[in-house]
Amino acid sequence: MANDAVAGDALRVASAGPAEGDDPVRAVLAAYTKDLVTAVDDTLAGFLASEVDSMTEIDAAMGGFAATARDCVLAGGKRVRPTFAYWGWHGVVGRAEPVTPVLPALAALELLHTFALVHDDVMDASATRRGRPTAHVAVAAQHAAAGHRGDSGRFGETVAVLIGDLCMVWADRLLAHAAVPPARLLDVRRCYDQMRVETVAGQYLDVLGENDPATWSVDRALRVARYKTASYTVQRPLLFGACLAGVAADAPLIAAYTRYGLAVGEAFQLCDDLLGVYGDPATTGKPAGDDLRTGKPTALLMLARQLARPGQRRALDRAGADVGDREITRLAELVADTGAVARVERMIDERVAEALTALDSAAIDETARTALTGLATAATHRRS
Image 1 (cartoon, rainbow, N blue to C red):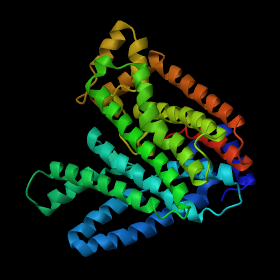
Image 2 (image 1 turned 180 degrees about the vertical axis):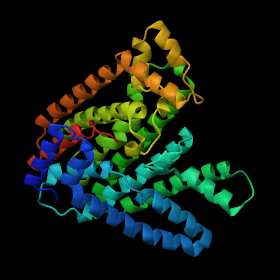
Image 3 (image 1 turned 120 degrees about the horizontal axis):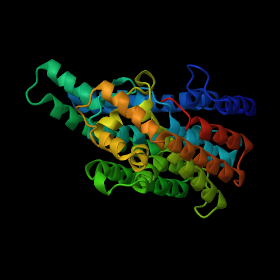
Image 4 (image 1 turned 90 degrees about the vertical axis):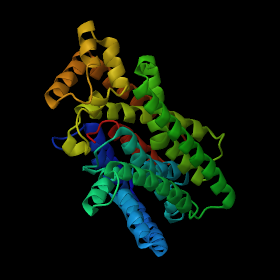
């Protein structure tokens, strides 16, 4: 895994900011976690090969369905959640223990993430993910190409829901493969279950906000960020890692990780809000301006409405699915003109500072401290 020299190099990359054409989070994650990501991917590939074989024995069609689910899991991604879980664990055990016994637990978080992504894409009617067709779109295209009966779009959405469900079951099954004492695994499971509950809560609030924007506010948008993103992206993975290392729930480290995780997780979502309007589709893998087309009540767009002059607010209220690319570009410029972008950028910086303050008080391995410092910056100043 990462040594002090590599961690120091990665921190310098993050601190220096992005070079032209660079994505700093990819640079930092690569420097810190190249071996970890490879190990997680290998764990997932081995586990999923066995699962696909098992489902193929049920029926050949089930094998194809399971293979589609497998491909969703293995189709790229930064492995952010296993990374934060690893450093949460490493912060406690240092270099004293090999990572192999806990790799199944770390990899299980990626299966949970795939469950959330596939369902989220159905709910948002998203066409692309990571530069590829989303699961429901790809399955619908296969249905149409095969000339099957029924509505291809509806079939694609139905199968995608089942793909997400299967990934959730797979996550549970792989978590059980972690080689830790049974009592500790029970504590890990409690943390994992709370992460799942909070993810569903955040997703529901996200859907509710899109359908009841009149009652929404910046505070509620931040609450969505806290539960939909911060909880299962940074905070709970860190606590999950600490549980894998045997840290008690009332230990001071848990409070430090919680403070760091909430701050970085909220900043991560605020960065996503910016990317949802200003991101380059070639880098993000998703169309630009989707949040403007849907009127998604993100913190960025709620702040824009709050800060907008009457004429600007009327223009924002006219945004919708039928708005063309030229109008989306104009609306993005309008959002920036309100001062909302600058405000969100300050909010991100404030949360990163809060996270680093939390790390200062944490009694953890120094390599983990350096890694988490670099990741706090990289994960919140990125292009995808």
